[in-house]
Figure 1: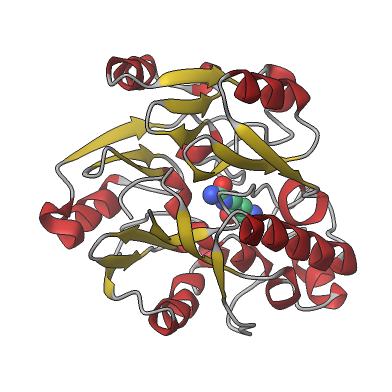
Figure 2 (figure 1 turned 30 degrees about the vertical axis):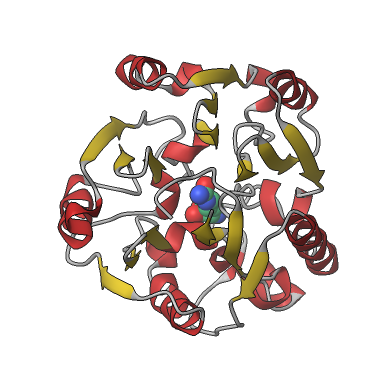
Length: 287
Ligand SMILES: NC(=O)NCCC[C@H](N)C(=O)O
């Protein structure tokens, strides 16, 4: 599990039907959670179905998290709740306060799926799964930003022990401030061991150089496709990717780099809540 691009065999997800529950729940929550618009419940359910079909057609077995009244509509973005290693999962402590109950709810799903829980981030520590990527089997790149802090990284390191050899901390910019969602994976999506999709204007120079020094080629997302989540792309296998419809330049650049691209309409489950396909999925087993 200590990579982001091997063939996904099993993946944990939460269907819009169970995360959003009904239109009244969405209506009560979306503004306070800083969504860009009000998701439409029936359409969101159709979009979850379609995304699941694509993933299943690409060889993924989906483990579905059940409805849970202790969490809100952001619980659809399951990646953020846990970090998964070869030894098991670490439950996060969410930087976004409204999401704090989510990791405990996810723990039940992890248990049901047979993934052991190694521990959890506590105290003043904060880690969100979208702020971390595994590289080369034993290295982690992790954000230092509004959702993940140094104390969280310290605890994560001690819970993972020698499963991780090196942790590279990547400082995030302020961008739109603490109320917005900005993760490490807002500007980098690994696509294959030697290929990543990036939005370079947001990247610290050292991190961009570090990736290239490791032999990773970079495909650039153009400015006009950043807000439409062009940079949030899920690698289902090396050079097999799932992304949101409506990012034609990014798609064409990925295809030019030899990537097979599959798209879904994510207006309700992705764009409005600012969570793309990497956020909607918590891979549990990769080949
Ligand atoms: N990994 C991700 O980028 N997750 C997206 C989370 C979106 C959610 N509305 C949030 O603000 O946390």
